[in-house]
Amino acid sequence: MAGERVLLVDDNELNLDLAQYVLEADGFVVDRALHVDEAWARLRAYRPDIALVDIQLPGSDGLSLVRAIKATPGLADIPVIAFTAYAMQGDEQRFLAAGCDGYLAKPIDVHSFAAQVRSYL
Image (cartoon, rainbow, N blue to C red):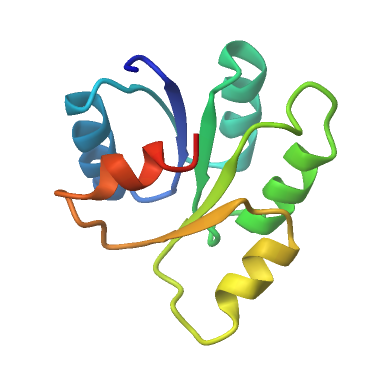
């Protein structure tokens, strides 16, 4: 099934560009946000089917955003995936404990990224 809406939250425009390109080529509709305030505006305006959230964001960390999404009626059921270059031991467990539904590492593998995202839907 194509046309699922993805919210990408990342403060690095190159990461957003690449992820958007790969996901749109696979049929996803992509919304982008560079920071938490923009993410909230997109969440309220478009209610994505899934959100990929960078953990390091300016002004507020991504895990705070994840916790807030999961605590918001009408948004809490959206799968939220940690989308980060963090790869330290124990980080994935920390992300899941904060409410993330999964974890995708950067840099992305352009050949498998869309399928990985789709697997969380």
